[in-house]
Length: 325
Figure 1 (cartoon, rainbow, N blue to C red):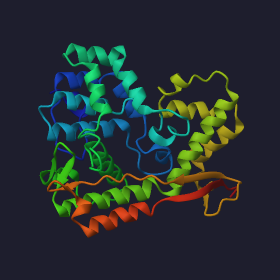
Figure 2: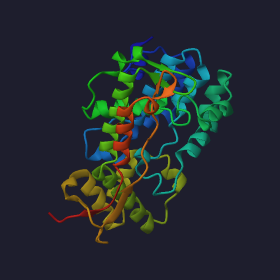
Figure 3: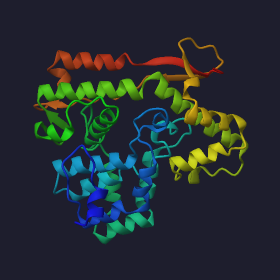
Figure 4: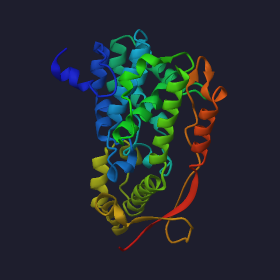
């Protein structure tokens, strides 16, 4: 493979996987290239050192899928396309602005650029959509950890400096069954600790607060700009959105994006709601666990149950305010 082709599929966490011609063409498509310009960590990427993109995560999910299922071409393709519907800043604004990135992913797969590549290699776009819409080894079935989130937890904790063992040195201890990730009890505990560590960061009040402030700035911008097309917004990049907000006719929107970019020390969390700020809360956590010899780890380990209990304790109902300090 040419050096530039190899570089497009290189990243530090897993062994190198050789892409086929179909995968090379997909990685060059605009929907895939756009992912390079979407922060996986949402607005948290503006205030933290966790700055990897949806593209890197996508390559990671594809590499893991290809590692565990090298002959399943449709599954490998689904891994490459699973996130192309994400909005700017990923999950940061999706719920607040009432978008569904899964529906957008379907739409983009059926559009000409991606569907024509798939059909050129005799892959039915609807078959890929079907894989993504059903529980699979990518998502993890029922309460079992899947490949998609496995990469997220590896990659987030790696970028945050909280990982002790590179995933490439663990893969010989990890399998992927038809249900999801399966491993030994020691490695399973390590994976759960990574999941807890990642949740403590990306679901911390500070990270949830910056997502809320970004969404609020977009809402403020929309409230005074009657030219907004929400379908077009969904296809923007993070940089597009930042530029839009920095030049917004809404002074408050401009103030909020400036604080996120340059004055994050002004963002404070109130433990008591005063009504003067923006309410923030998180009650849902990722509760899927790896298997251990075919059984959920929490069914055979008190330590695993304790870790999952700690996840439940992360919920909060607070308020974010902007100080003048």
